[in-house]
Every structure is written in structure tokens, then in C-alpha cells.
Length: 104
Image (tube, rainbow, N blue to C red):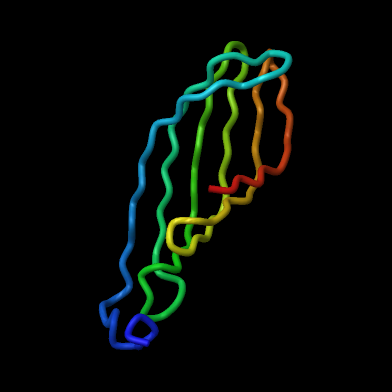
């Protein structure tokens, strides 16, 4: 009952800036070790709550002969959420377009 009280979080909306480095492995053709950088900016989207967040994300990944650029919107509840938005893959002077859905 105390956790649901509107007086538990009575602060102003806060903005969170979350930078991060990515390191992983991409399977399949043209795969290999993948690295990159991601920056997300989030804020409280539910009034008087610091656990429901939403915002924007920008990411770039590099692997062998391709680069992927992603921009999207994200939402999370207690650190679990998803990010959705367009992705652009640059490889050998060509550009491929797609939509990424990234749970976290």
C-alpha cells in the first residue's frame, strides 16, 4: 500500500542520460565481433513515478564491413522495456533500411 501511495515520489520530473558501450557477436553472413555506442535520454512518463520511464535512443554498431545506425523510442518499467525505431545499415556503398525491435 505504501509503494502505491502518490506521496512516495513527490519530486519534479527527472531526465536521465544513459551512455553505454556495446560489445557482442553477430552470427550469419558478414557477422563477427560487433562493437558500438548507445545513448538514451529518458524521463518519467507517469506522473509521480520514478519507475515508468520513456524517451529516445540513438545507437551505432560496427562489424567487419558494415555499420548500423539506429534511432528509436523506448519505454521501461523498473528497468525492463523495449526500444522500437528505424535502422539504417551501411555496407559497400549501399544502404539498407529496416525497423528494429529491441527488448531489454
